[in-house]
Length: 118
Image (tube, rainbow, N blue to C red; front, side, top):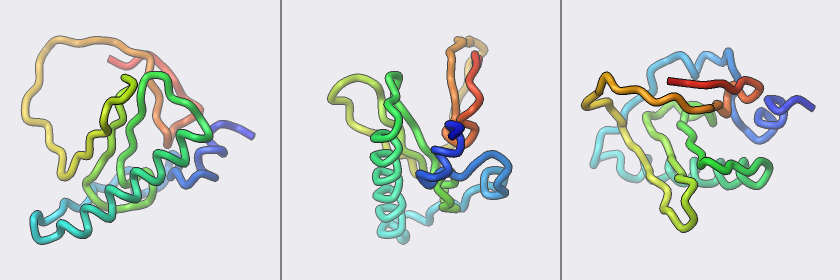
């Protein structure tokens, strides 16, 4: 079984799925607090399921569309032991720099692909 097939069997939406190319719907907070909490819980559950099947030494992150949820949410689990996961709701880029760093990375939805990413 290819690694990408394993991720698909764990509920990860694979490369080519339309939900991965469409903008995710933002939450109207605080009015949609309960919906945001439900999505966060689904992301924690997915991350636990995926982490049991495949260890991630450098940490892991997952976005709601990757588990077929059309909402603007993501979960980041740093690699440091005991580090708390970070829940992102309606994330936006607020600043950028011209500095770059290159790291070897991959994506759950493109699981057969790994490479250096600036």
